[in-house]
Amino acid sequence: MNFQPILEEIVTTLRPQLGKEGAVANYIPALARVPVNQFGIALRTVDGLEAAAGDALTPFSIQSISKLFALTIGMRLMGETLWERIGREPSGNPFNSLVQLENEQGVPRNPFINAGAIAVADRLVSHCEGKIEMLAQLSSISNEAIHYNPEVAASEAATGFRNVALANFMKSFGKIDNDVATVLDVYFHHCAIEMNCLQLARAAGYLCRDGAHPYLPERQVVTERQARRINSLMLTCGTYDAAGEFAFLIGLPCKSGVGGGIVAVVPDQLTLCVWSPALDSTGNSLLGRKALEMFVARTGLSVF
Ligand code: DON
Image: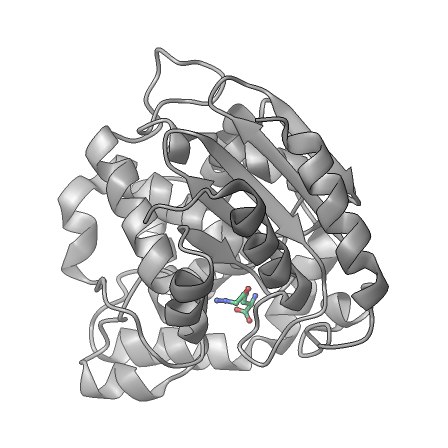
């Protein structure tokens, strides 16, 4: 399939809607300043063919898309033991909610809500240098150097009151082993990674290759079974409390971030990234979701 004209058509159709609906995440000052009228889309197939359109090369804050890559490191380093303190159920609640944690004794519903990612960060702190390992992994699977944006990391730390609450709450249940400030420093830095659509489409490539490294096919980033499980979690939990709607409308494993990016996987075929900063009420990119709906309608690609 020739994807380039499809991506260009999506950009042409959606550009007139930029700035009309939704709002950028404003609870973190560094994100509130991002101009709303941007839209990019890029993909990379299992054969290494690439297509990109719009602002596909503009760097943005990947935010919660980093939860996908943190989980990947955790699964690789810890295997099944990672799941001793983290569930695998959709939360049905906003990503920064505290309510379920009390009922469920400090065990987060899944690794893609904030509490779950903080729990993953704690596990990483126990097993590796979480900040260094993340950049090493991303630079390897993107095939180019990836960096943190220190201003965004500082902005996360300065305004992350709910995350501080979530981490301390889990600590009070004995579910966080390490110093809370150290764990949050890792978590905030992961949220502050900057990448563009094409880099993310490349980096997520192991998820459409049964876990194989996107550039070094003889190397596994995770096992085939782990890749399948990450894709399942993306489908059921990757877009917060809109995961059911995403599965219904799009039918692809997706992971979103409040920077406006969404990574999607078509197993055995390609990985795709869309980005547009204005979010809907669930914290997912509004035009990003529309773009994915258009992409599956035009290509017929879906896991169902
Ligand atoms: O923890 C925060 O407030 C943000 N950095 C969360 C990032 C995000 O995209 C939403 N998360 N699940």
